[in-house]
Structures are given as C-alpha cells and as structure tokens.
Length: 329
Image 1 (tube, helix red, strand yellow):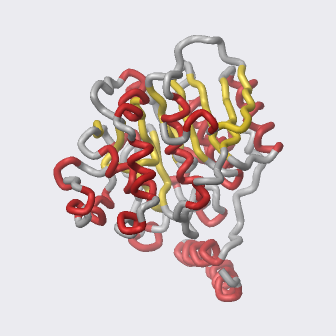
Image 2: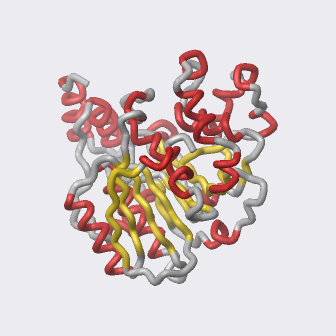
C-alpha cells in the first residue's frame, strides 16, 4: 500500500445503520465540495431506499456545519456516514490547477484504506448525482478486474502517449474516474495507487498528462478495467449548453456526472433541466435552505456571464462580465 496505515489522522462516525453487509460508497472532497457530496449522498439514498448503504468521506477540511448536516442525513435515513480527516501533506505537493486542487487525489487513498476491510467500494465524485437504482453495481461480478467504469469520450488526448506508457488505449479503453466501482483486492494486488503515484511524481511522464489523476489511474489499470454502460456515469458539461444549445441529458440514467467548471450548485446553472437530480436531492436534504453559490472567482464570473446571456438575462450577464474583467484571478 502506498499510503500505509498512517493515512487517517482522525475519524468521526455517524450511524443509525444495523451491522450487516452493505455497499460502501466513498467520496474525496474538501469543504468547498462537501455541499455537493452531501447532496450526492442524499440523491443515492432517496433513489435506493431498499439498499443497505454506508458512506465515507475522505477530507482534510470540513466545517462543523457541514458535519452536522451529514449527521442529520444519518438520523433521517437510518444510514451511516464516516468522515476521515486524512494526512494531505504529501498530495498537496502533486500538480493542481484552477479547476482541480489537491482533493482530486483523495480517491487514490480509498483502496488503501479499504484493503482488508471490504471487497468493493464505489467511488463517486462530489458532482455525481443519482436519479435511479444502482443495484447493478452491488451485484456486478468484478472477478479479475481492478475497477468497473464508463468510457470517457476524452480518450483521444492520451492515445498519443501509448509509447511512453506502454499502453494501448485505442483497444483497451480509457475511463472516466468520477465513478469507479473498485475491486479492492485486485487494485492492491496490482499496486494501482503506487503505479499512479510513480507517474505523478515523474516530471517527464507528468508532462504527458492532461487530466492528472484520471490519466495516471488509467495508465495504472490499463487492460484490467470492466467497462459498463454510461447509465452509471452519464457525463454532462453544462458549459456546452451555451456552446451548442443541446439537451444534454437525452436519456434516463442512474448516475449523472457534471464535469466542467459549472456545477448544479452554481446560481447560473439554475436554468437547466439537466440539474433536476441535484435539485430534487437538495430539496430533500439538510442543505435545502442553502442558497446556490454565487460567482466568486474570475472563472466563475466568466461562465456566469455566458450562461445569463444564453438565457436572455442580459443585464445580469453584463454585470458579471464587468466583474470578470475586474477580478484579478
């Protein structure tokens, strides 16, 4: 195991769940994304009321307010949520940018933690929201596979690196790491975390990556992935709304994944039907009275202005465009 036994600095458990076999569902998030993770947990629960589920959040930063809301979910739904305060000192040295901070690497800690504790764990990004049954993932045979996941349409960016990494993504396939059903034993037997980290700390190999952790995990698992239907990771980029005016969620799905810099919890995403799984779960959750987030960063104002313009809110668009020009970064 790469992270060893000193991964968890402290742990808080909220539980109203009887001790019996369950599906473990894990998230990695800092406090900025706990809003999304909490609503995601609510969305899974309300769409899978007959399932025995236990949730895990790996974080290095969570407010008492958000922790209290997670406890309320446990009391309401008779479920269990564990919060792990992890040692993030090392991963903070790994590459990040304005879109992704160090929290993207929490997912690499999960299989290490569950080694010897569970056979499988479902990892979900904090921007994944459930709108249907996930029983298929509970019963899926993972024998001989490190992970079950969905093809990612962005695979073309890494095929050119096959020679460097000795991979063959054109044939083996490239997956989106926002939803991963992890076979804990196979992951650890194949040293996936260590292999991923060795790529991320190698400057030559790192320079060949576009999506940092996702690319590294794909390289480390190439040829051992079980690809499943995109019903279980239906990818939506809300910024394509103003680019092509497309009804992005054109098929029913169990798990909707909102990639890109505009999320359903942003105020400028409120116009779109695609965000309904988030809205339903938010209104059912302890975050029901939490306002949608207003733009704060330069990128926020940029996208907010574009979405307001696309939806005919020209004055609001002009104001945010002016703020975009004024904000330093």
